[in-house]
Amino acid sequence: MLNEAVFADDVAAPAAANASACTGRTSKAARPAQHCATCSMRSACVAQTLDAQELMRFDSIVSATRHIKRGDTLYRANDPFQSIYAIRAGSFKTVVMHRDGREQVTGFHLAGEVLGLDGVCTEQHSSDAVALEDSSVCIIPYALLESMCTESRTLQQQVLRTMSGEIVRESTLMMLLGTMSAEQRVAAFLLNVSNRMKARGYSAAEFNLRMTREEMGNFLGMKLETVSRMFSKFQRDGLVQTQGKLIRIVNIDALGRV
Image (spheres, rainbow, N blue to C red):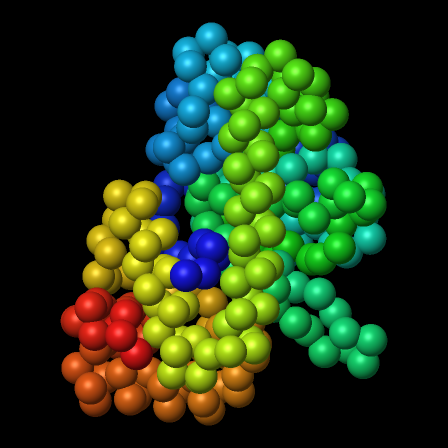
């Protein structure tokens, strides 16, 4: 299944953060970082496996939290890479631009996901990260994270797992676009959302999708009309019910057999 994160109901957003602490594009002022120990997303974040002492150390390298308005960018392609970002609340899409100006959605991410790892290789970001709703992130300077990884094997392993997840995501997307039918792509996408929601303590059967149908189609390599047709078919077959962005999976086993 997809290793993409998609969207639960709103989580309470923390205070906004310092624009000068990173390379992102919003104008909100910074505030001190929220403590990892009290964060509702800790169990889904890069700090999830740390013990109390390591968590205090990790807290000390998280420089700030930052608020990003819906439609604003956290960073853009070719921005210098300095930090990675743990999504504390809200959701994002990552996009790249084709030479002809067309936008390609490459991923969806929600609270607990890490953004910005695309910059590790070239020291420049390769995509834009755009907020799908009012969101907030914790800013983690990569040089400090790298230094702490030399001291904490647990954190090193967790960072490697996070990076591995990005590799899995890319390869799974290639499989989706290359081998699955339109019906299978949409079913796989919804099942992934279900799994992500369950892992975060939300309902696996009922959730809101924060992206538009058009953005979903862009990611899955499908036209808007095709995505809409697949949702209508799933409803007729008694697999899902939809009301706006609210999705209710009626028969998850049958959806998995599509």
